Picture 1 (spheres, rainbow over the protein chains, first blue to last red):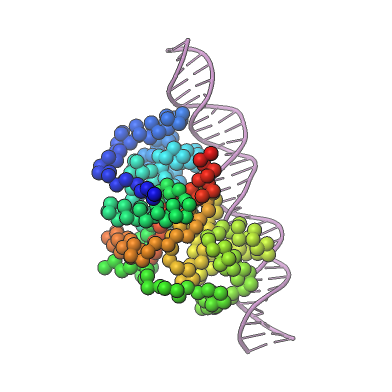
Picture 2 (picture 1 turned 90 degrees about the vertical axis):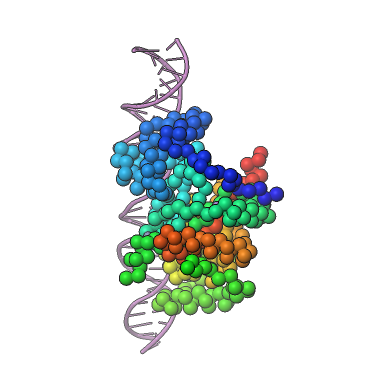
Amino acid sequence: MSTPLHRHTHSDEVATGEELHDLVAKRLTERGQRYTSGRRRLIEALVEAEHPMTLPAIVAGSPDVAPSSAYRNLDLLESAGVIRRISSGGDHAHFELAEPLLHHHHHLICVDCGTIVDIHLDDELEDLVDERLSKAAVDAGFTPISHSLDVHGRCPTCTKAASV
Amino acid sequence: MSTPLHRHTHSDEVATGEELHDLVAKRLTERGQRYTSGRRRLIEALVEAEHPMTLPAIVAGSPDVAPSSAYRNLDLLESAGVIRRISSGGDHAHFELAEPLLHHHHHLICVDCGTIVDIHLDDELEDLVDERLSKAAVDAGFTPISHSLDVHGRCPTCTKAASV
DNA sequence: GATCATATTGAGAATGATTCTTGTTCGCAA
DNA sequence: TTGCGAACAAGAATCATTCTCAATATGATC
Ligand SMILES: [Mn+2]
Ligand SMILES: [Mn+2]
Ligand SMILES: [Zn+2]
Ligand SMILES: [Zn+2]
């Protein structure tokens, strides 16, 4: 009972560069879908940003992606398990590369400006949390799939602004 | 450094019954706002449900609260720190009583139907997580305020439906 | 390389949840 | 009571997201 939600045996097997795009292409091909240039531009935006981005931010940075296509393709890439949607309560959802493409991690979320940055916890704590959460889920009859763990607070910029 | 985000010295000091409404009234009065019958109906819906609810669900259960008022007052009660908004990615946000009115806890979120139920972790783990998260936040220049920890999975009903 | 079948695109329309507006009503204090 | 600002609620307005559909790109097959 209560099987771990994640394995923390990763060391550095995170895809980078063209390798990453090959992986995305494979995922899509398996589903009979194409890794078009528009979809690649979305992935590239997320790779380059190095932190979760909103759709408006992605579109603003890549004026050649039509909003309607961005909505459609971010949904599609999420369904394919290539990216992950983070609904942190702000006006817009954020997107980041999904777990096989990026190490398992968590987030610091600014309650004022909505900025999100990644944080990593050590494997011991991850395993402990994982085990307890899985147990609690199974006890409630749930089938656990993943977990999310966020710190809500104020980013450096907003901390300064708030202390004036 | 890294002061805990929460104190786990609570035992049974959670407000119940009329006590709870008195506390809500006080919070609003302090801000020059009134605890009207419409606002009380919202709080009562959340107390009775015993799990986070969406606005449509609240309105459906209390046909005498106008949607426009529900939106306005849920926002207001959130600003007053009386309720908490949970943005779990589904179509609608969920609402629950905020922490002084309810023990600190976390959530199981069904990825299929959006249902949310509460789970409690023991204080030792809470303190450990708290400490590590606060440290990570401070290291990144963030001022931590709170944390959230959710298990995403399938509820009993959706687990059955998925295994057909 | 030409052809074909289909997946994909993007402009604009449609949708629908949330927010705003405004005349009316309520709550509280004098 | 009376008076005044807070709060209400119906409907209009907003605007992010989804949908529609004719045009285009893609990749397989010949
Ligand atoms: Mn984790
Ligand atoms: Mn906690
Ligand atoms: Zn900020
Ligand atoms: Zn479910």
